[in-house]
Image (cartoon, rainbow over all chains, first blue to last red; front, side):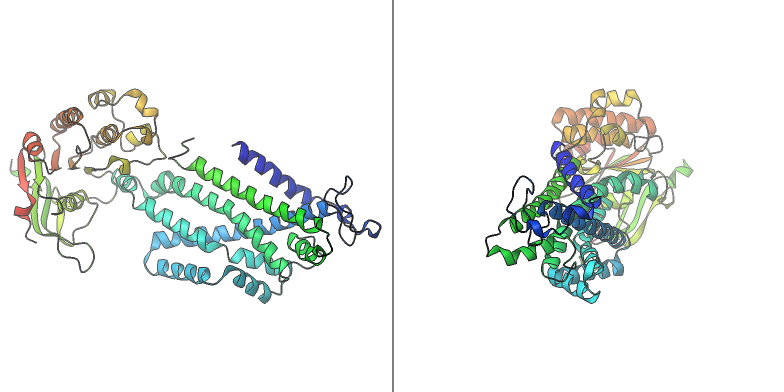
Length: 264
Length: 210
């Protein structure tokens, strides 16, 4: 619980700090070019004199907004496909599974680049690419969970005891599938953030003037040979930390909601 | 007693196999359980006892023949008059529910029945994972002893119980069966148990024509 709370506060903090940050916080200031980390600029400044701490926070926040959209779209797709496949079975199940296999068969990064490129790169391209490619794993999870709970003895016994489909769904199926689903959605975030940063890093994503983590990292590559290590180290660490914290939240919730290990 | 001939749970020419090309497990099986009667179903493992039990309880539909309850097919909606108790109680309870909810899913048993079944009050507040198989099984039996239950299908229900508990549980179950004139099908591989609790013993191999 404490871990979840701390991780949540940190991530929400970055998220809102970034959203409400005035542009002046990471303004160009040629008088303070390439300053190593110091008291005024904890993470140093870049070749245009922008404060790297502020840029990193803003960049992570941008990534989180995209990840939020992506997780929203992907999770709704996954829920709809997974439940439909499990409940209706037959042809629909085969089609959904085929789509899942198709998407999972193509390397994820290639798929992201393709979609982003097709939609004209930029924020729109990345968001769509990240949103449209993260549903297959979760679809599989939702489908198998619904299938397993529906065929379980206690659900079949509940029908025999006169429960309607609606009540069984409400009392047995949803409480079983929802926690797994929510954990899946939370664990989508680190993937989405990483993928957004990756394709932006590769130049297929957000434009260079945006303060995105991918942009910061790809810029810093040019300066790494010149010994400007702070340009890459701190933003990279912050990205890593954010991704790991999402993972911590997801894994802890999983433990908490699992009836074998948790039971409240 | 003329009307009684129609009454009962009847398997008529039941045939069943798993999958489309599997071999027939059951073929031309005829079996009738009358109210108040306790039929023991015996046979070696793998001969289809549990399958027949599931078919009679309405968990599987027979591929051939039919299952009749008082002369008509089993109702698909509402509380089913034919209830089943399983071999593995852990699988028949929702691990996310407390015992209280599990016990009262179909009806609300009274305190007397709980005492008879040896169910302690404090167990009601526990999770299924905190009870042993034998303790869980008592809940599952009490759960289906509601007033609307007319037939009970017991599929190896006491295999996981120790001898003393086994005796206790059967005693209570038989008392309830007598009180409500339940018809019972007792699936077991133990002939001793079948002889002790049943009014009639049927060997599946003898009635199965597969």
